[in-house]
Length: 575
Image: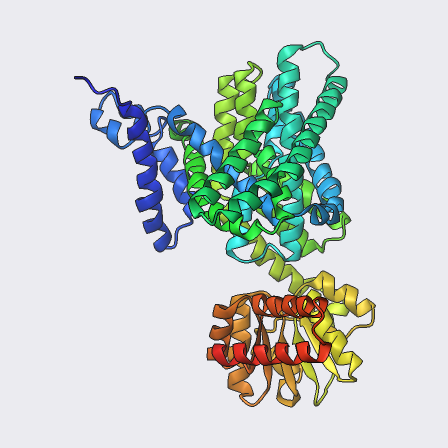
């Protein structure tokens, strides 16, 4: 009896799984970027690569992608899961706090960049409607690539990370009007586009409002029920149902699936189940995003590049330069120091995954021609492959510019002191530590590597100095030999290790207090020689316990004594 199994489907899935599970991990072990690995292998094993030789060499059937549609659905879920996790990291209050950068800086970047790219496309002889869709699609950067790069370096909480994330969020939201615009252009070329787009956006806002209202009522009750069953399998099924279900609900209203998942993530971030959900979804996100970038790589037409390499390289450079020229000055206007603004612009200079969504919708609607689509998507895919290199170059340029373009506040050096404390990092944690030192009449010097923050704090009269605390000579300038204590408040593991190592070599007697993420990180810092370590997770649990005991009527003195006793027990265990 003939087999009813769709061999081409399973063959294509096996190629992708082999790429994700074998080839890319080996490349990563050798130091290659996993995103670039997926892009390159997608181009090599896709129908435009080795797949085009299948008629001459039939054995390639088993090691190439036969039908891109076999993996397209899985790839789309990768973006859906990514946006869900991004939403999970936010909350409505945090989103409102970022509104100036999201709707101001991000909104202006999308509008101005899209207008510039649309105009340039018309100069190349592309029709007005095609140019509009292409311009808007190219104005968007790769959320998946950029967030992955920033997260890998633990830089999401830095000035560059927060501003970049805000612009990316605005770009993700811009996908909605982009897809609505494609629908309007496809349905009636003589319509009042602005009026129809305004109506469509109002309908989209109403649809999202319904999703939010339903989610607020439904989500917490669902997870309360699922959590009471104490079944990891049921919890996993509930999470997958919410992610895919929210995306499906958005799609029913004509919105991108990823936007529905993003809203669901924001709603869940307000609940006590956020960490558990994040742990469940993270492994799926990595695999599905890998599949997505593999399919992006399949859009790279190597033969087209071989025929017209000069044109494609020129278009890639033109795209990156325009986006840098637009975003860097805008970021500067919004108060971001020029080195950080330039780094941010270079990080987002390439095209993004939603260009494939927008232009793909344009092709399906008959607005964008296959020739324009093929050339544009090849440019986008190649530019995405260059993102890690652009990010590294931007970071180096930012560091160099920070050194050469310091304002008068950044050139000031600490004056000679004795018996003082050195506070490394003047963010939220560092400011509290410095404030407590002041309250008790103790002298301190604070160090931070963010020039914008240092300039602002020095103008406010605070003893903050710009510099690299991982530099032995700079720490000596800050009076390391005469200090009475050193406090490390930064959230950067490598930098913290470097500082502890310098201090233990130069001043093994100096009391050194360091911030740690959790118990594992705390043990590591104690092993390096830190005098005292404060793990964030343990300290938060102790403060919660203290508040709970007091609210339940236990006397304050007894509570404080027991908390101190428990803290000492933790400290002995960690040491």
